[in-house]
Every structure is written in structure tokens, then in C-alpha cells.
Image (cartoon, rainbow, N blue to C red; front, top):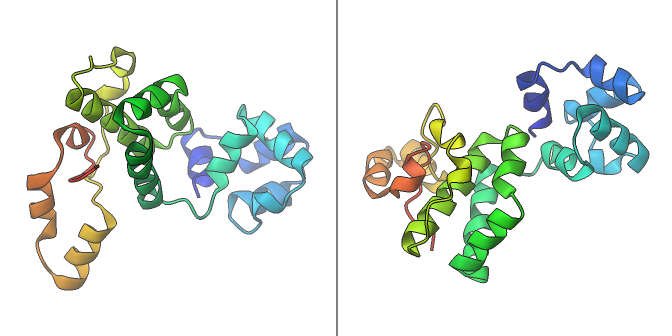
Length: 184
């Protein structure tokens, strides 16, 4: 659930959203705090809130998706690469501006993951690096993000799986502090 973080990051109050959207404050409050599933709201209400935030309905729904986790996102991207093929995935990524989409939504981990995937697949396929994203390449996550199975092993088994994962990590992902050992 990213909507609350999105509002905080952009210094937008729930009151301001409700006021600009002309939607009852409790409705916006309940959506932002996950008490109401936005998919159960009237389309008109969703449209007003999206417009008040300068987002598309799809972008707002992405921000409000309670079930979306980075691990799910990561798995989806890996599956897409396998299903589409590496070159087709790169083309789709660039044509649909998916990195820009997640960056705009302040979903930095997802944006960095896609950019790392783009750079990794470009290297694997002898493609030139897309310089369009050089500004984003100046940043990275504050702390390393490990795959869920690595985190679980570290916590439950007490094994030093972080160290092993770091040794096998793909460099393009490590540029953004994402520990990814296997994509294909």
C-alpha cells in the first residue's frame, strides 16, 4: 500500500486531496489508510481522487493495491523476461516507459529494479545502455533489498545468507542496492 507514503513524500494532506477532489474526507481517509478497498469505490470517486493527485486511474489503483509487494513485482518481471524473451522485454520496457511510471509514483524500489533489469539485459545482449535514465542512475536505495527467501533464511535459520547473496549478486542490480542473484 503505497498511497500513504506517496502523500507523505509529496507533502499532500488527506484534507487537501478530499477538498480538491470534492470527495468526503472520511472516504479519502479510509482509502489512504487501507480501511476501504478502492476497488469497491464508485468509479466517479476514484476518478476525482486521481485527478486531484494528477494521476491516472491506473496509477492511483497501483498505489492503493494492498496485495502488491516488491517480491510479487520481482517475480512478475522475471516471469515476463522468460515469457517474452530478453529483447522483447527490453523493447516493451522502453516503449511503455515503465521505469518512468514507477518513478513518478515514488515506487523507487520497483523503478530501480526495472532499470537494473534494463541495464543487465542490455549488457547480456550487447545493446547500448539507454542514457535516458542517467539521472535516475545517480540514486540508489538506502539499504540493500534482499530476496524474501534470503531474508527468511537469515532470520529463521541464523545462516549468514546475506553475505552469500551479496557475493553472487548481479552488478547492475547492486548499483541500486538490490540484491538479485538470478533473473533467468
